[in-house]
Image 1 (cartoon, one colour):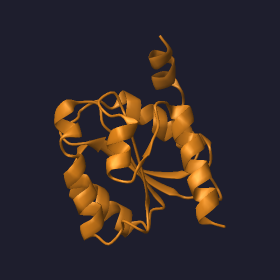
Image 2 (cartoon, rainbow, N blue to C red):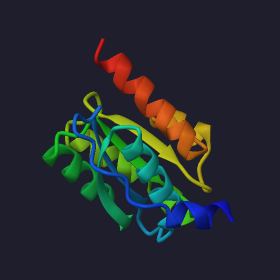
Image 3 (cartoon, one colour):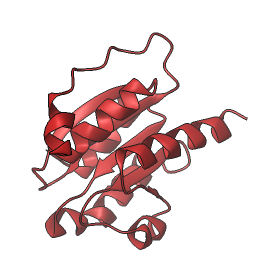
Length: 144
């Protein structure tokens, strides 16, 4: 029932002085929005501005939106095997956009592991709490 409680939580307010900007969404063709929404709201409550791509976002959409809004972090929810198969395309889209050294990439979801994240130089989180901790730590290290 905790997922139901999480979905019923009110939308957190926009942070007045964001810690950073996060582009977040589920990787195509994944249509599972609940896990992504839980992480998005947790990041927003923690002080991050979030730009939501929704579900089934293309790798190119992640890269283009991150470039457009000058994102600090790209957070990707991957909950199905077909979406997991698109991880190399996501990585390539980020490289092609010239963002590989500029943005922090975070992945999580039912279909991925730490090994999948390591393969593309991304951070991996198993929960919304881990996602917030990773984002805070990565932003803190970047600003040093």
